[in-house]
Image 1 (cartoon, helix red, strand yellow):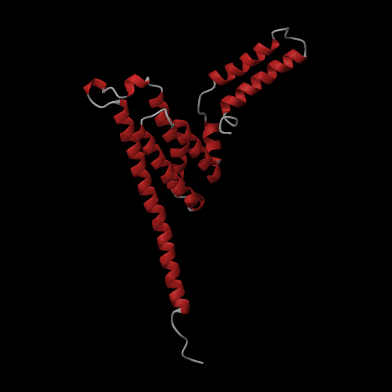
Image 2 (tube, one colour; image 1 turned 60 degrees about the vertical axis):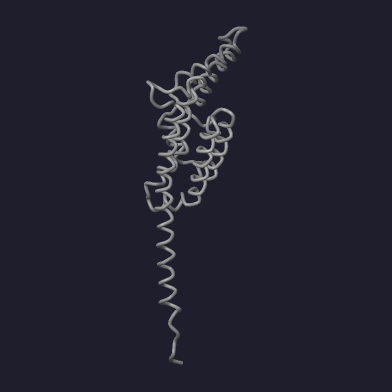
Length: 198
């Protein structure tokens, strides 16, 4: 669904429809089908991977959409990354899943953490792995310039995202805790003192 609503797909589809229209008007000959398919591919390949429209669509995704996206993301990683990195990805997914029920309230309050949660799911987390997976498997565990390997660098970046989510979670729960304490004070003021005058 994310791809079907992406600008790449929409531009490719628009070009393909133009090609189909040209065929129906008799402007294309027997090779119309490869031409239409080629127009779609041109649209996909020439359109940037993430445009402002894609970012806007990601910002409008519901918590259920984001939850589904997380499940798909971690499932696609299986067998493609070492076990320690898979565990980190699943831990990050669990942290994000725990925050999603709070997302609507955070956005209602205008809390910038809501933007952070959305961007981690739709951009930062998949982008971090995308760069890593472009590397040949044989080079991912090889130290760069005699120092850390791509495996080590990815682990550090995932740990940084996890620590960020720990802070976001603490802040989100602090808001709920403050609300609970305030409600307790209200109830105590309202109902805690027995009325001795009858």
